[in-house]
Amino acid sequence: MNIIIKYDLQAAPKTGDWKHIKPEVKAKKCIGCGTCVKFCPEATIELNENKKAEIDHVWCKGCGVCAEICPIEAILMKKN
Image 1 (tube, one colour):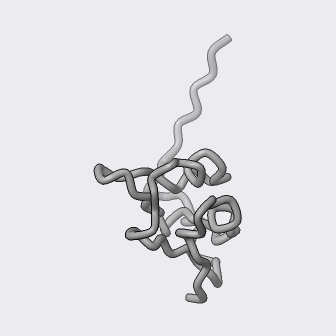
Image 2 (tube, rainbow, N blue to C red; image 1 turned 120 degrees about the horizontal axis):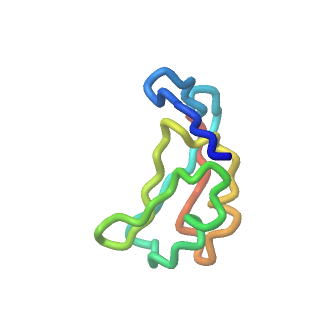
């Protein structure tokens, strides 16, 4: 049996609205290893065309996993 869930992304509540801290990527320091991408529980991080981490703050919950897992500390958590 196949089930299709129809989901209206525009109507969805943005998880990033309630966070009090957010990750900030130091682009000059980022080596593009992708570790943060793999470990982000909300899948809000991508590597851009320059192989630097970019975070979608609309959906980021501010959990800090990316900052903890970054091997060179290129991601810092900042208060909103």
